[in-house]
Image (cartoon, rainbow, N blue to C red; front, side, top):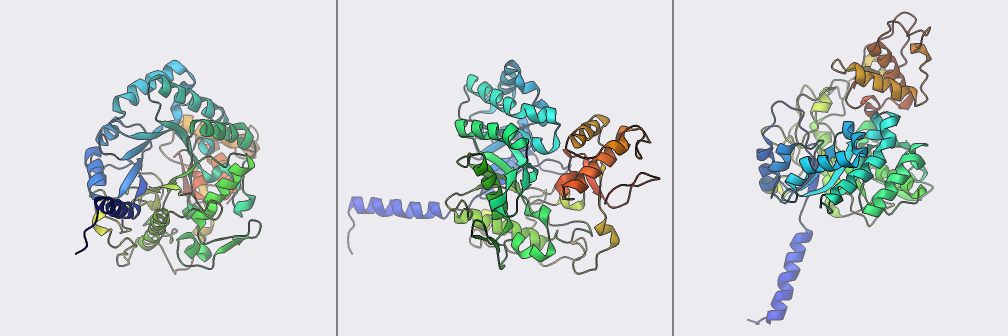
Length: 462
């Protein structure tokens, strides 16, 4: 038998290790907590560490129980400062106290790479709060540095409502006003601090039966952008390239892009036939396969886009339709809703493994549409407060929506209540912006309805 030299043996060992490291599968996930049957954070952290290939977790608050649970796990955590704190963070003394009380006790034993100041602020908050976002990010970053936490980046997550248009990607641009007034300064801050630009691309919200295969990472004929001369085989890439081209127009294309939220629900209402286990497995499985291939997009071919699937669990108290409560990869008992190779024991078969189709609760696939499916309205949720609804009115009426019907003498002024006026304003905005589900979110205070709320001379658009 040929004897290898110690140098040759070391090089062979290094090559084998490098090969296996390259082949490791991983993905990020959003860990939402809107459920009354979810396991304790300590169990969740242990499950993710021991049983899954998930190496990054994003949460929507700064929950101390979750921060403690992920201590010494090696799992990277992205946390979110609530939108309501943004005005307070303009005060450096307040920002420093916030960091000292909420971040420093958990760092570095809990690995926090990014702290988000707000979630989808530009889409749902008032212009007053929107204009304070970038200054608040800068002050918060300064507070982290003064507290000795210089290894943490600061960013903010955005819905794709920040785009004026996204199709074709080569013609995409940010909305006027937000582009140079807020996003350009934000991108400059991110460039200077090497922070990521976080966006939430959801092909699900643009569902079209004719484009189903394109949306779900299935084999399809593709879409051609005649201006960039690039072919697209999936909607996810198109949305990311739309963000990229919008950044190019602001001369900040070098800032890293992160897909902070994306996913597909496995169950929905009768009017949501796209919400099936098969479709969710196809989308998230395709997403995971794409991420671990290391391939970028047609306009960013050499970038591996950090990606976070929404979400870890089905959340049974989340408001909205059935779909909103069924984005999870796992049920609260840790059993998988479907298999896309997230569990370590299934890494030998990383392609999506689909369960047998279930009857009932899977939409009305193949059935004719009912008239109600063609009429959709955006209404305030029952639990929404007057303060929240007044904020929605202020925002909508500042976005070019005609609010004269809810002013004195208008056809919808009576009854003269905040809830009644908010219903008209929120629906008008929803219809104007394209009737996507995210156009009716309003920071969790809106819900899509199918009963016409028109009354008397007050007519709601549909």
